[in-house]
Amino acid sequence: MTTIPTTTTNNQNPTDVFNNFLQQIKSAQSSILCGPDCQHTQKEALLKKAYSKAQTNFQIAPTEIKTTFKNYYTFKNGPNAYDNYIEQQYQENAQKMIAKFQDRIHTIIDKIKNDLETYITISVYYSNVNPVFKTYKQHNWLLEKNIKTTNANTITNKRLTFYESEGIDNLTNLSNMLFALYCIVCFSYIVFIAISNKITVINKIVSVLFFAIYPYIIIPLIHYVIDCYYSIYGYLPINTYLQ
Image (tube, rainbow, N blue to C red; front, side, top):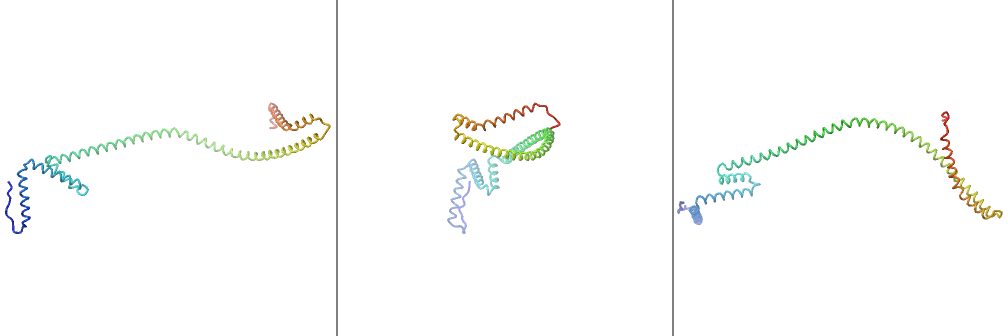
């Protein structure tokens, strides 16, 4: 049982002595009313409270958290419980790291296999494409040569086209002049027959219609005659000495 001292020193304040006396009475009462199991529970609660407080201050006191948790866990589960807990945590972390490294290794192996298959595919493709490339290269060389020849021929053809266009323009101008002359002659003839009393009205109408449709008949007729001439000329024997 806890003894309560009743004597005080001369240096103590009476108020402090009285407060200490009350605190000692409360401690004595707690010791009498709380047995070993109760004290065990109270101490466990105090240690858990200290651990919770240390968790709150994790950023500024990580060591305190570890120490308070160790004290709490050891007191609650036995002397070797904390060491067994730490060992279990290390084993779990090691298993996670092993699984992580295995996944990474499998990923790397799969990537190497894919790269190897890609390399084999590219190698086979290159073996098949290389002869085709050489063939196309030869064809391109011949095509480039033909293009140069074609460009030279194009320049010559442009010159010929220029001269032909110039000849066509001259013929067109001549044709327009002849058509204008024809119109003048027709107009003069129409005026002549209009004022003439010797020509009947029917002859006048027929004459006017003839001169009106004559240009549209004679030109296709001339083209047809020329085409017939060249068609017949194509069946005739060719004198190679004149070519």
